[in-house]
Length: 344
Image 1: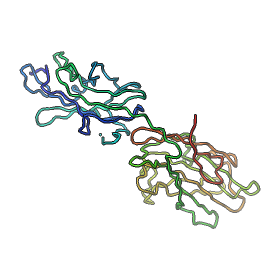
Image 2: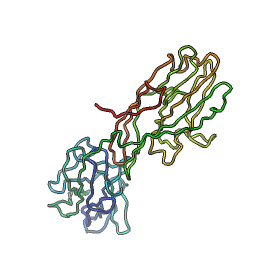
Image 3: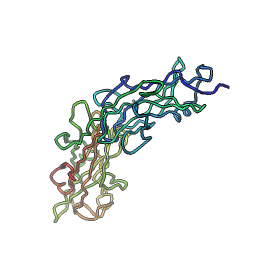
């Protein structure tokens, strides 16, 4: 049985096909790097190596000093075997470590490189260890001299001026039933307005998560004498946006709103994420709902006062892993939904 003792080919290239590119130094932007290696036996004949075994015996290294990059590290230059949501190349293109074989017996492994703030330009090579214990490198002083070069760019922090905060009236399932309740709802959409870029994921905190009230973060029931008006705010944080709230019955994404099962026996659903590319937006819904008789009944669900609110904090991530942090003030729910920059 042949033993893997050497390689007849060892090279590294970006998955984009280029030898150099930019990378955002934010610890999240990952750049795909493909290693091409042709294992050989003691007679110099090609030998096929198990893909997982091959991955375990390859390392990305500094091209000059041959130090190893941090495997799944939290600082400096690091790399991993799994692509994340931020695998886009600044000014270019991009794509678990997988190994594949070409017809010429060359096998390929793809890793993903990232770096923390403050890093300098890095030229990267590769080191391989064979089953015979031999170590072969593609480096300045190695047997091979293939390399890729990554140029760190300062991470971007988005502010309110970089985002759009558009709103429009949206339909509700029972909003036209004016015998007992009249409901109007408006969707607000948080999005990035930078050319050729967009938000790809959002982290949201501070909201109710109980069944029937998921995403509910603010209400004010007025006036004090009759309590006929319900003003409420909802954030639809679940991902993926285009399916997390999808209703096969209604044929669109809907969020449960105005949930008063005790006393009023009323609840409604608003149409949400009603625009193209819903994954690029974070949808909020502002509701004004009126009822007759003795007004709205509380307690209901998490509601035990006429006015209560959270201030949801949103961290929005673009396709490169750059972020913007914002918050929506639930205390002024009777007028609109207002968004603000988060300042430490």
